[in-house]
Length: 166
Image (cartoon, rainbow, N blue to C red):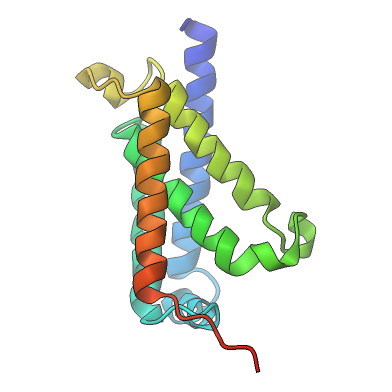
């Protein structure tokens, strides 16, 4: 791809990985910690909210660390996509597009970026490259979309019980 493209992919992985680490850390240690995150998840209609809070923390921290290393990049991107799909569907969709109105703008950008990174691959400066793991192009994007959407659908099918409007 060339040095400029590989450097750009490294920057994308660093930023997306750092964002996910920050999200995971905030859900774990920020504000209300796990209890506060669980309360918020419960308010979104998720059952077993404490379990959901811990799953969110582990997914976000894990995906962030994998992205920083450029290791198992399509699976890390699938985790990002799944987190963003759940957030977009349950917390932001009803608020419209714009992030300043708590809309889905931000989660849409992160989710699409995850799919694009799956297609581009992690670049030269990645553990995947050093280990000879090459899952990119349509295959990489397909893995991100397939795993991300199936994981989201599974989580929602098992744990989401929307409130009934009266």
